[in-house]
Image (cartoon, rainbow, N blue to C red; front, side):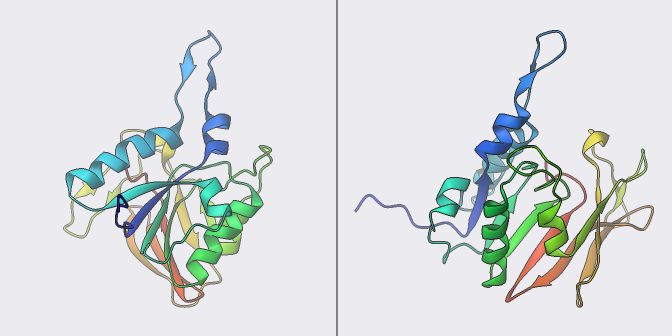
Length: 193
């Protein structure tokens, strides 16, 4: 029938974040979009590991795309999200899905105004991590992202049953899981890629 099976993992593409991210530097040099860059790294990583994944546009999310087969919806570096998109993401988790957010997703609304609505509604307070911070992995080794500018630590608040899976050496959570409705939120304090 020409239809592909619905993947269990979706990666959110936010054109709003892309537009706000893409600009020109002070000397006319192009500036890359952290959001688009994350998608360009995540999608091939899933393909390489033969994990079915697909990118979903924020417009499809707002148009009521069928997410019944989606077990994990990843929102990475999407700093600019309208209130409607933020609510649709939380509705997905509340209905039983698993939503991965990094600490900067939804930091601003679609007009560029600081909102942090997604984090606050999810029960998170993003906090800055001191320079040089590293994540302590379960095997005792250290992971220190090359781009320290993108380090952030979600602090779980007002979420009974939340737990930290990974911590920065400072003790702040680097990866936290929080129950949300019938589903859960996974909040990352370091970039996935």
